[in-house]
Length: 438
Image (cartoon, rainbow, N blue to C red; front, side, top):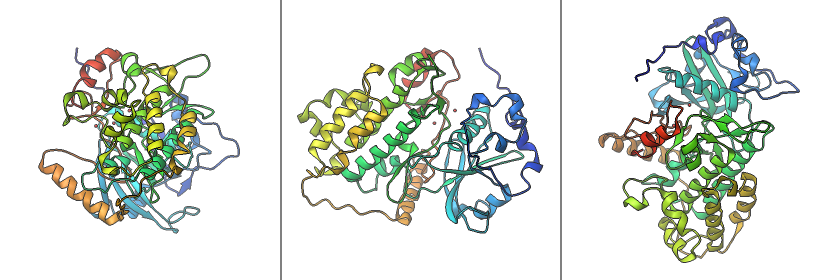
């Protein structure tokens, strides 16, 4: 049976976004002394008829006009183009101290939403609701948004080092040293722990290397909350939802049942930890068949010290803490347990990782790490993007990373999406196909 796609306008989601009078003046969502986080489900039809900024009172978000965003990006100039993901292009901009009272001068990343399809509409709203209300050193900061006529834009802090995916796997990048890898793992773990332990818990649902952005000091921050869900409340043990996420990172029980828990994020973290240890991608179709899925291949090797040494990233050239590697491998093994209840909580993960960054039993060798400049990194990214285009591939390489999102029928998509409510259908059509991001 073929489902006909129903055409919906933005006014059916946020009717007030079409009201120009709400956006004429420069405004910021006022901060209140008491603030309780709202969720997507809290936005009833009656609430949606109000200005979105009123619904988010207390979030301190700026509501930008389209004219302002054109100004700071030089009319979305190609010279400011950072990249393009499945939901639209991203441009670098610069906010000076004259644009908005109380908003400091700073570089920003401006993401323009592609409005084709309901999925992008809902993602934009989910992103505003979650990142507009959640603040933490390891979450990327949403500065504001634009909701004018049919235009939907998001304004984030600019992350000059781009995504962990680019830093770890880009062909011409220098290898991340051991201590920096542990710093990134710890920062990402702290971000997840914050979400899971919030008063109103959040399940991130799309934890992966491309969604971890790095600032100039390589501090890790979680980005892209389009797939995030409020966690179970009361006596509920899980959230039932359609299976969505990224192939290679999604927890097996979530794929099979559609039951989403915080333990699903913990499994995804275990996969990321493996990527940091081995230098391998979560899914790599260029490797021998038994090694293509990283978690399936590596987990049995993690408890054997001799086998572990052979799985470590060769680009580290042996310059890593042997004790730290064993402890990180043991932690990854626990996170990847096929029994969700045996996985550690993210707060336990944080406590386990904290000492590893400072271990000093690293062999002295000839390894030299040079921090790439932003311009060099950009040139490398442009060269790789041009190479990808010649080979018929599309690659996204911009500091405010917005991952490609495709329906599962796309043969080149690594991400798993389905509108079906039957998880076994998602598994059949998505996870068993060659697969990259509501």
